[in-house]
Structures are given as structure tokens and as C-alpha cells.
Image (cartoon, rainbow, N blue to C red; front, side, top):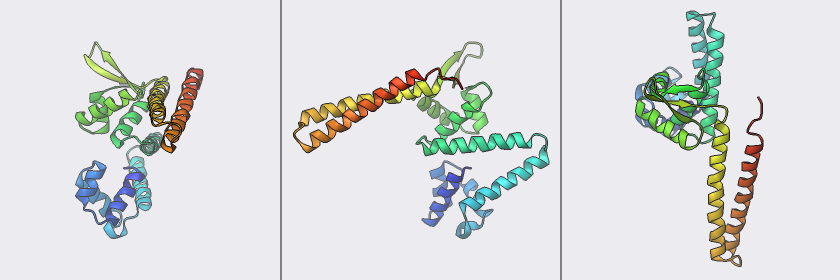
Amino acid sequence: MTLQDRRRIATGLAEGRSYAEIARRLDRPTSTISREVGRNGGPRNYRPERAHQATARRAQRGAAARSPATEPKDRKLLEVEEGAVEMAIGMGLPKMVARVLIGLWLSEDGRLTAAELSRGLKVSPASISMAVGYLTRQGLIRRERDPQRRRDVYVVDDDAWYHSTVISSRQTLAAAEITKAAGQTLGLDTPVGRRLARGGAFLERISLDVLASAERWRDLPP
């Protein structure tokens, strides 16, 4: 559970929401929310930052007891994954979409089937289907067909950010053209027309600059 999730739990408790309501908002089982709150001070004394730190300490102690030799690597991967998911959510991605994207980014070769994603993230195939559909449309991942296993494989590669940037910029450019046209229709001698035309021109210039920059830096070495 991320720190952002815990802050949302705290907000829900402050608003007087039930565990079930909070669970629905976070797409989590109600039992997970009740256990999280119960072991971290209860509904009156729940503090997200304190709960987050306590959970991290418990995880570290448990991992150390199980396998001291591998604990540092596992902990680092967990920290990277949790931070990356939280960052992606902060950038506007739905939570499940963010988890699938980061799961692919942190996989060994950036290639996973829907079944592998479902098992790794412990979520339903339907949730994976929704997430990969969104990510494919945004150009952040691509779909390949594995003829040997006769199933789709979802891939994230070095061109992922390029394709995503191009798709987003082209969408913004299309919006800019519509906005400019609306301004022309309403007339540049009107306040609304001038506002739309100026906004459209700004979006057009920014989009063209981003597209040119994406092409220029596409093969940038690491």
C-alpha cells in the first residue's frame, strides 16, 4: 500500500466514511482497510505517515528473518516500485494502470503476458485487460503476438516514451486546431474569439515544438 493510499484512508476516516466506502474508493478489500487501520492506531488515531513507516519497518524485519542475504535487493526493488507507482498516479494515471505499467518497466526483459501480470499483481484478468488497453492506446506499451504460446505479450521498450509523447502531442495539436477554428468562427473582434484563437495558437506551437524535440532526441543514449 502506498503512502498516497494511506493518506486517502485518513481522509476517508476524517470524513466519517465506513471501511467499505474507503475500500471501494481504493479498489481494495474491506478487510484490508480494517486491518490497516486496526494495526495502526484505530480510526481515531490513524496517521498515514506513521502507519507507512511502521509497515516498512515490519516488512524489513520480516524479510531479514526470512532471507538476510537477499533482503537489501528485495527492499530496494520494493521501494523503487512503490515510489514509481505513486509517481505515476500523481501524474494522472489510474492506480491499476500505474501498477501494470511499472510492473512491466521493472520486469526483467519488459515483456509479460496478461496472465503473468495478473499473477504478479494479484488482480483479476479483467483489471489487466482494462489497464493494458489504456496503456496501448497511449503508446506506453505495445502488444505482440507470441506464436509459440499463442497469446499476446505486452512489451515496454526504449521507444515507449517517444511513442507516448508523439501520441499525446498529436492529440493536443488536434485540439489546438479545433480551438483556433472556433475562435475564427466567433470572430477575433470578440473577447471569446480572441481567447480561443490565442489559446489554440499557443497549444499548436507547443505541440509542434514537442514533436520536433521528440524526433531530435529519440535516439538519446542512456
